[in-house]
Image (cartoon, rainbow, N blue to C red):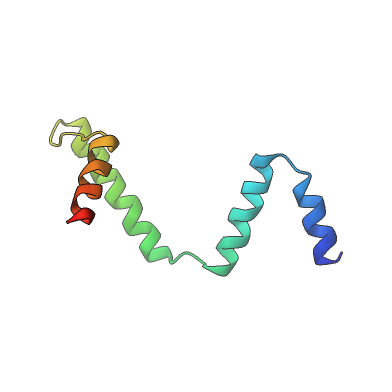
Length: 74
């Protein structure tokens, strides 16, 4: 199958399936490092645990992005 034909066929798929295909293609271009993936999973699990134990306060995304915009204006 030629590239143009493949793209045309993929374009007819539902958006969820196209996203899944795009994700898989990107993974072949930038294969994830298992060590980095493992470290991220561990960090996420630590942060979820901290949240569940009440050790951290959540900040609404709106406030975070406003702070970032303010910082970049300086």
